Image (cartoon, rainbow, N blue to C red; front, top):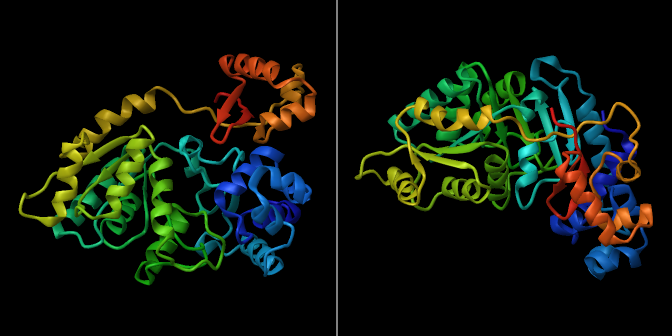
Length: 372
């Protein structure tokens, strides 16, 4: 379980008002860790994020102590009936952090997880769609999810009404399980009518959020949640969607991340089919069965997994690798640690990238890797 001091530094970095995700990422990139960013002088932070954000971090956010206590209590709750014994805070650089999320423009720095944590590193596909589906659409979502789950693909969705709920239900009937990415803290369930479903997912699948405990369902959080659904999966299947639909946002984010997009066609007279038809016109793959999806996904899965981060089992003989440690690190931090000029470091880092020992992460960060 994460230690109190480490958790406190992460929460201070992420929950300080006026800081924001982008500034938090830039501070992490420049200083190498949340604690180093908190401990740095206001002047040093000001050079990275400007005066307002640098000054804001100098003062702990209101209620930080209570937030830390609540999170540690939540992590320590061992109620096996709800899956609470399998709770974790997963930070960027943790071996269980979803590797595919590192490819998106705005990867979350911290995730709250409850349930089968191992699903974070499994092959996954997103299934999304309308909150007001037709009976056929709901049936399709459940059937596709069950068949894909039985083919060892974890189904990821957003726990919303309609297609999302049907996809989770179908995946729980299959063998691989499901991940619900939500826009609230994991101590809340939204919509409330999915409380029982959320408890089942916490027991037999995984509940996941980037939002602190106690966070209510705010409208701005759900489009942000969609980037995680698209980012942590190999592809996104849209079952039914109107032209003005959050599901189309998820599909667009998946396409921008280089992932596959699938759409099920429907009646030309149904408003719930128009979003899928628009996606197909834009290049999404028309699918009529789970087998159509698997034909596209299986070669991707067979090509192997993305590199995942693991600690080395023995000391490194390379001084640069030793200087990097096992956390995300910026070029500026490596210059400070090694004393080498940046142009020499860039050349050496490129050599290590080509040899598979270092990966370049979003935000101009670097990280030691082990291929598994």
